[in-house]
Length: 305
Length: 305
Image (cartoon, rainbow over all chains, first blue to last red; front, top):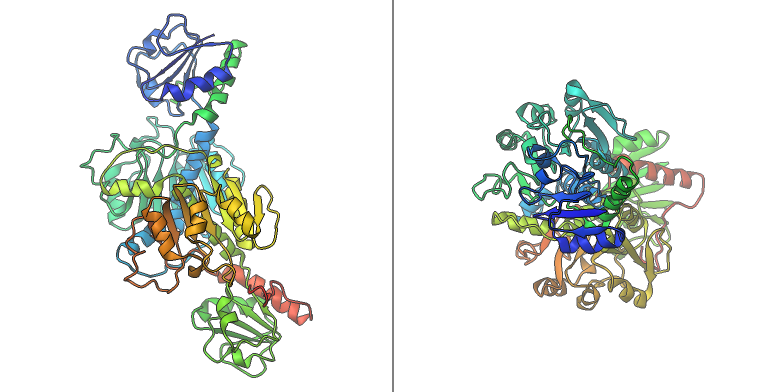
């Protein structure tokens, strides 16, 4: 098959040798041709999507597909798959655990104290004293939940549709969201960005959380209403926020978030696609197309993810 | 039995109600009496130890017993038990994971960048690209190893006597130490402090580690030769150090460690004894004494832990 690799961001030199090894029968190229069977895309060059109407699969190299869906030139008749990369899923859980533990062990406060050479010990809590509430129970949320449960945290999860999560309490719907937030010390956003999830972390939802907790946003910037978050930090209702994603990226230098003492910022680096682990998932989908089977992880255009 | 609670540091009001509930037949008191059967001690008031020669058990409320052993008034004929508190063990693993992930995800570098409002993403590594080397494979080392393995890290462990560790590579002896260090990106010290382990993290041992790694010392200050550590940070051989323990505590304000950009300091707070989980272990040892059985976790006076 003819496989186009089209990305303005992902470096082809990290992908192509691995893809060639995984798909030795196929032809891989980076310049558009008319006879593309499968297009591997991540922020593709302008004009690329419009020409893919005859492809059998558009395979995103990323998990989030909201930018592809927002592009009017995306051919809606072609199956579109999100990438579920085990390396990226593991990376996301590492970041969620790092931040959850940073809050739980009060390391953000010890760093403040270090600046003043101050030796003062805070009260210690058991993991089972704290509930981590996860918004979104897809591959990312489920993996993070499993690992947090392994450390002894109470874990709650919320999803659009009811979903069971072994060892965790699961919630769904608007009432379920409030019920979860009222017991959530650390709120982790791992939702896809859709009309329904935009702004979900706002003054009202934050106010339902117990005082002194934290927000971890590793999904998309617009999930969080930033002025509401800053107000909650300034009032002391929230103790800390860990933000990896922003409405505008790179985060503008003038943003008050950079210098807010209650905010830890990372440059959209919580979890990156890892070619070494992703290529197997891509090759599996190419084989599905070759055999005429429906690809894995198809995007539901209606739901928006 | 008559049980003395003797500590200048542990607050009796957090312990006594739980101990009374766990040992309803026994008499608990905080002032010394001649007829003590079991003494629960953690930094006991001066003079207490000398009067315990007729006790059946001295039970430390802490895991580290090097200060008790260094006290010449400790009656050597009385069995001495370290405390193995599941809550404290879990807390230690939380701290080890938090620091290992902080280094692995480059969060310490992102914090530096945040100070300059700088948006720059570092290369991501898989957990399986990194080896965490653990010094000490007792209850603490084994629990941390298990949880690090669960996140996909390569784990190596070193102990005085050969010890198997499921899923990890284990080393022992002086040659084994060098072999482990040569593949260790993050060195975690969880050793008891003895003549043989003092100064184990020094210029020579650090130099064997690959460039760009980290040291996590959550055991005792004298395990690390501080000038050697600072030199390794200044030369760039080590990227970061996470220090919870120091030769002098509280760490003096004049210490260069406080303001070193490559050092994260916590005030001996990596893991505290947690009365809610420790009391069951203490009660189990009291029952052993009551039945005339040898207590759990007896200190080997020769080995020093």
